[in-house]
Length: 216
Length: 257
Image 1 (cartoon, rainbow over the protein chains, first blue to last red):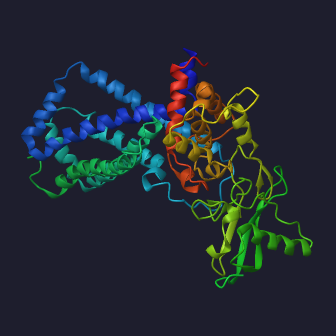
Image 2 (image 1 turned 90 degrees about the vertical axis):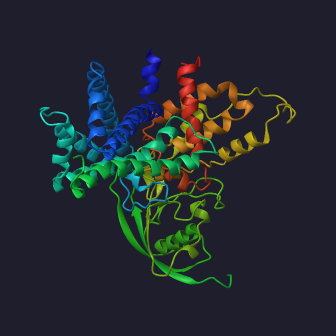
Image 3 (image 1 turned 90 degrees about the horizontal axis):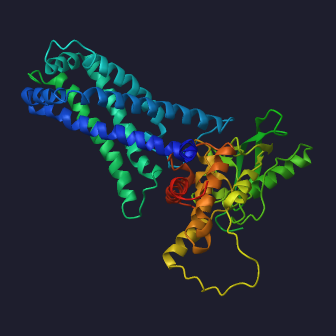
């Protein structure tokens, strides 16, 4: 089995692991954004969605542990790649001038990644590691009605959208999936879908902040 | 001189370094009067003549054919490998692309795998090492076989020819934010993997070249696309996607170790 280790410790192998863990996390985001959208349909629908999630029983800890593993793996690998890439150019350029290849999303991957990490920790402290006394709809309302938290959540999810705008296309390239008929479309759709995810998530703190009856 | 040619004066901020072991620094030089019909390298020749007359060491830079096909020239001009004009080697970049009074910052290609030799000259033999590792086809010597014995579809031949346009200048490495050589390796691997003559060794080639690339101290590809934008031969990153596939197949599904 040495060949497996050898493959995935190579530069291309590491990129593929980055893409694989990224696509897993991306799938979770997709489910999460669809689930969160139930909040736009009112308190009852949102509470019923939360109830159904909680009734999954033993699947929940298994899922949580998998998420924690993949998330940590994605971060550790990103830091490893960052360090290796820094070492590949010991003497930096005095003038750095993009030729138009990089996008704002691709340039800022490591920073948006950092913001997402902080965001996830705060997010879990707000909604996961809490005593389950209040209905979740009220916890969401109470938290996101505070302007400080609302802004923090908006910044966090927009960073996530930006991260996805590069990551979504990038994972296909890393897996070697490209075709002249759909690659350029995929690239544009990736940027748009990243933005969409960010905006849908951001709509929740915006509504909580501006609409007094949200989730009541 | 053409009707549109002008004379411009520039300030050059050039990286000077005696050798790889010594410390380097930027030094400012006035270009003197430069015709806009000159190429960038001809402009450097003029500057070097003046430096020689003043008894100062001329600026060392690599060059050979000066017609954009050999891959010998290349420095970073204002933060861009080969300068800002798309699909152009430094020797084909003309001074009409600059304005009178401009300051131009000239730096060598920077990569751990390209140790500096002097001033703007770096040692790019790492790219030759990569080709020696697998960027070839093994053929028996003897009389040349009839050219059309093995038929190649036109589209495939075109794709292989596009990849084979790589002149090995190293601009992709210089332009990559991560100092990765993926565009170079992918061009070599693609060119041969597409053609029937290259197929027998395709798995071995992909494994050997990627492993050597990692060993030589290049960075990891981050899909930033700066290489493609800087490449004077405009080699596409679809070749990188192909290399990823070739490497994956060779690693997990071929008999090659």
